[in-house]
Image (cartoon, rainbow, N blue to C red; front, side):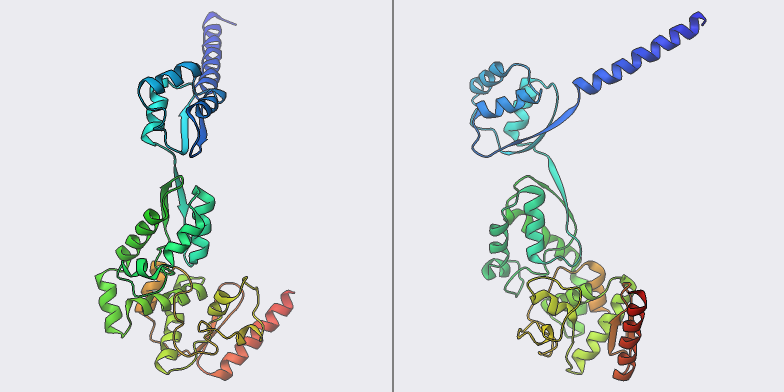
Length: 326
């Protein structure tokens, strides 16, 4: 091996060692600071994770600066090791990690509360109590008894244990960014209040898997509403059942509830989930169609029919196809 090759090999070896050492000594670690924890308990966590090297001096500095009782609860990310000043400043300023929480389209109020509770420690019961407080709901200009349907499905960056009031406000603000003046004017033009438009959009959201079918499904519902016929929306039945079923029974269709669109004409009393933008657009701009019925194929698409006879044939076709697969 010549001299140049030897030098190159040693250089790459040194480089590899440096990379390993930098990873070992400059890695990042997350810690959780609980509400009510003492500076001693917090210091022990920091030292155990290798964030600070000298716990005595950390506690001393916190006391000298008057910050020992100003550390905020939350999830924090630190490089290890970190300086005492930098670590304490982050804890006092509450510079905790932000969590990305995605609310899928069609998610119900209860499911939203559970997602925020699981992902970032939001108090579920407090969230639901606030979202179902009719006085609080009306403070947003929404004429409904709860915020079901008005917490817009999107991705939100939130801190650990974010206050329910804060995240609810952000979600409702996002809803009104989407449901803008143009949408309000369109709803009025077709004889719908904002609330009824959202209810209809939530039905479309739950029934349609593919966005291209949303305006058609909306058109079917508009036809039925205008003719004062039962909507017969399966999703409204699923909403009132304790648990979602893969297939509804005849008995399910007889459950006495204002949400049961197989019994009561017109729209249900409230939304059955949070509709996304495309479902809202479909509810406001339905396809002008002669369809009155649709049945799910089982692959996310539907067969649309103009008459009850066609619809019954479609149901038989779907049933036979399923039997072939089984």
